[in-house]
Image (cartoon, rainbow, N blue to C red; front, side, top):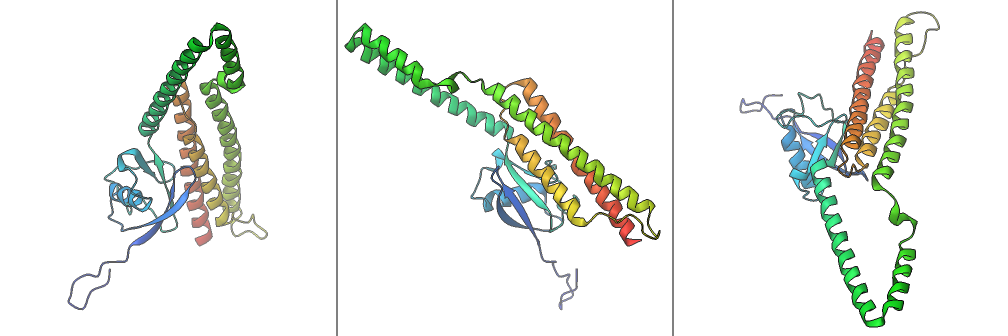
Length: 251
């Protein structure tokens, strides 16, 4: 920081950070200083996103949520970084519970109305109404939501497998360029855009995992958590590869 005319130290300008909000990734921007705590950054992000409930959201950096007392500078957040503001698991479970209660209440009201109608119209009409209602429900009425979530998680696991192959190719390219550094016709170092594109794909994959509802199933929740952890590992590895690539390019 530079000195002010009165002898004090000038406060450096804040960093402008981009935050992708929710599964649709609507972008907002916040100001942060190196000593801004993660909790303060989350408060500002929630406010910028439309006064969202701070207790129902988490602010992610590189696919994980830092501790509230961590600082922006200590985490190595740069102005080019993209943060993600997502709803917490507890909030999603509570919202799903409320939706389920609403649906159950609607079903009770519909059954009560059907019973009242059948009592007035006779047993024959009630039977026809019952059959009609079963037909109107359609095949989706019997679909198991947990099976749909398992299928969705399988698709996202396949995507993670593809990302793993891309990352291995990127790491091999960095290693090859390091070995060939200085040699005539050596292996070209990967472009910075390749690292940025891979990190962006990983972050989107994390968001994709967040879209999968577990419906209270413990095995499904554990599988989703393991997949998110795997993707977070990819982000750490690509950061390491990017650093090695930069060191090679600076030498």
